[in-house]
Length: 442
Image 1 (tube, rainbow, N blue to C red):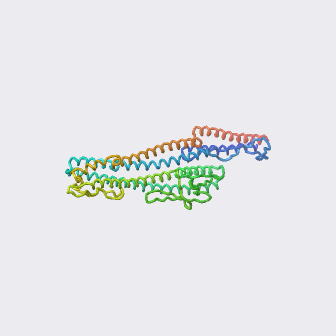
Image 2 (cartoon, rainbow, N blue to C red; image 1 turned 60 degrees about the horizontal axis):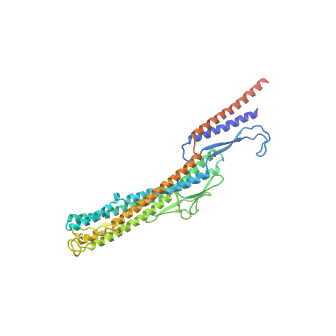
Image 3 (cartoon, one colour; image 1 turned 135 degrees about the vertical axis):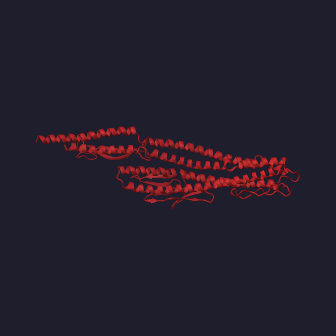
């Protein structure tokens, strides 16, 4: 009789815990990072049983063997790698698109200014004394210079923005490292198979997911589930053995980024948002240098063409532009009479020569080619982002297929364990009634 009561009591404990586990699954069906949990049950040992020898065949009830999580470590690792690649491509594309916008004519008007400059030069060949056309020529030159300064300012702001974004991302990365170490401590103290351990493991995986999205890391797990994290490139320890080594970011004068592990070497990540920001910073730095080169080349070419002529007073033409970089590119303060329209022979000869600059290597075509290169680079980054996002979505879906909560399945499990709980309760009731009957018969 006592065996019957023990069997019923063990069933009540086990099925109550199973119902609680299903309730957790249902309550967390939409919780990010939550992996489906299953209560592991096993037959209880009867008196005299050992793990190796069963003394009798009498049923002994049911024991709880702990909670397991529905996870596939290979799918998790694959999802982390693909998500890191997708985040790198996304972060890079965001800033590449901004660079493309900064170089567009809608933002700076450089292309329009150059076209107006050469168009006005052509018009001056027909009416060299027209002061209105001379003023328009100077205004077009000023528009070109202003466009370069505008583009340079936008690129400079982008470099500062990328640096700020990297600083924030590094702070978030380091915060996740600290949180992961706290989880490691908790896992070493948690009771194996407990709900508390499962909750800690969910949080550990969530933090590892975020770290993988932010930068390239290598992960190893010990027998208690505590994680050791190292930089994927250098192998420098980030978290493990009770130690946390944060990373830092340094911004060079031209805006390029470099990451360093505290007490270690360079954190040369090739994946994650930190890698995307680094690549974006490199691209912006290259564009700023290219813009400076174009400004210097344009100034040299157009100044030489203008200085080859003579102004209305017969004086040699002055330089049209000053400045040594795009940020300092400025149109000279000339009067309409100082526009060098004539050459040594005719009143419009220099403007004829000026207009003849148009060709394969004139400022217009060089600027159009530069803008086209940026458009092609952005289009390539957009294609990479689309491919990486598709790959990440597929990997995440495969991972979720193992870990996600199916409410229909949980409803079926809920009904099954409710019936089992009722059966266990009925077992105790039968034992009580039988005992009462025996006592009444005495």
